[in-house]
Image (cartoon, rainbow, N blue to C red; front, side, top):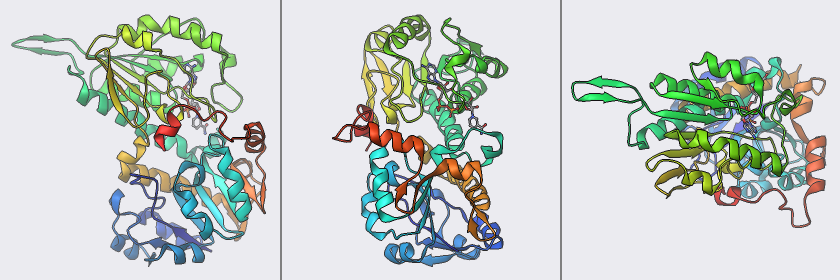
Length: 397
Ligand code: NAD
């Protein structure tokens, strides 16, 4: 089995899907690895490191695609607007593994089926403990939560920690994190380490304890309920009236904080709108809002994906693809997740479809879209194929 690792083509992407350190274990498992020249350079893994670890270098992308039985990428299919350049290079039976936005960009998936590829989308990894070591979204969210805090800390006209100096006492910054999933909890932990006073909020009450164990205060709005969590482990979507109520209740919390970090998401859907223009207006001038859901429509009405703007004296950041800005460690985690997935995917050299993990992540097989939720999503798309994809996503790509 030949693994091919092409250069990433998503604009500005710096990660690579496989790092040299993991190649020996892949060789041992019977894989041969070919890397497109320069694929790891931006992440800090130059070609000679791959060669020293036993990889073959391929200068030609066409030849790499032609040779590979399995293609590993970070952003492919629906997660990369430039993926159509690679479409003609794909061949029937080829295996694709990567982030593909199979629900958010479901309209791209039929193209994979038409090419006859066997596509595994890492976003569809089930939230079961056995799958944790393959969970790319968790790995990337850890990086994103950390980096978001650093961005706000370097922009804020205040310092984060409490400081008592000869020139007087500096009060610590106040940080509010909305959505205490993987990214949110990492943001809370990082802001606490920098000395800020932190509050956290989530619609899933189960996370209260985790927020508190990190030294933050859990904000309760009285809206949280066990039903907010789907069996999948993710939050469910609510109707507009619910979000309006949530906005009202969040207003006073937002106004008392210097930094607001929003991470609220519902898989495959537009991110819930939790902060309106009016709410931003109540924030203190000089404060910062960073919207980690910018790529999926944003949690704040004013967010512009990929941009930093100022409104009413408040800085609003809408970073896109933030994990790529820490490419060395992001690639390390990503590669490990993928290597673990490959180990499970192949049993005695053949694809193992018996496992829940492989079945849950399989999007296309033998010319068909086989994933029920992806199929459903495609059927629900309007004739223009754009339903549910409004907002920041267009800006992002
Ligand atoms: P996510 O990125 O989909 O969402 C981020 C957070 O936003 C979630 O905590 C969600 O509850 C919250 N949210 C959604 N709508 C909201 C609203 N209207 N108001 C406030 N908050 C809202 O989620 P995630 O970070 O990927 O993870 C969700 C959960 O899954 C976490 O508890 C995590 O620990 C768990 N998880 C389990 C596994 C596993 O067992 N293999 C792997 C990863 C994550």
